[in-house]
Figure 1 (cartoon, rainbow, N blue to C red):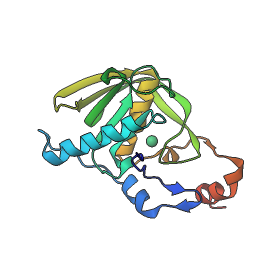
Figure 2 (cartoon, rainbow, N blue to C red):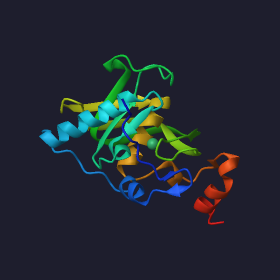
Figure 3 (cartoon, rainbow, N blue to C red):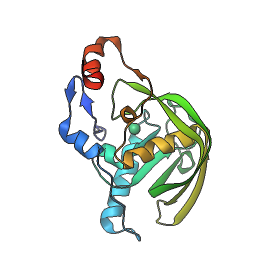
Length: 187
Ligand SMILES: [Zn+2]
């Protein structure tokens, strides 16, 4: 079975204008209580996320659904390990961060929607989030450390923001230097 297609800003050395347009949009909220379309979109995102062992998290716009839904790992963060139970991940609908705490820590991040690059991004080490869970119940969550970083990354997607929109140092393979320099530095 082929995996759900991930929308990307570019592919090889081609810019994906259409996909970039949706990835750059502010995602729409899901009606509460969930309507049928909302329930279907949540299911679609969760199954797309569970298909992948290369994703720490996935936001609905990354599969072409411009809605506020994210799924991410919360269990042992071994990227090679497949998700085995519902305890290993979390799903948030209409999430918003209500509190940032701690240090603004810099670390290099990758993103399935920005293939082949890494960007150093500053994230807070602790956040509080208000959202709805997968069943449509109100959820208040607190995340720290690396998981707080993943959640902030996924929440950026819902605002149409990607790692390349952060100002940190960019890393890309030497073989693609010309392409990425043209893209990011207009050389
Ligand atoms: Zn991402």
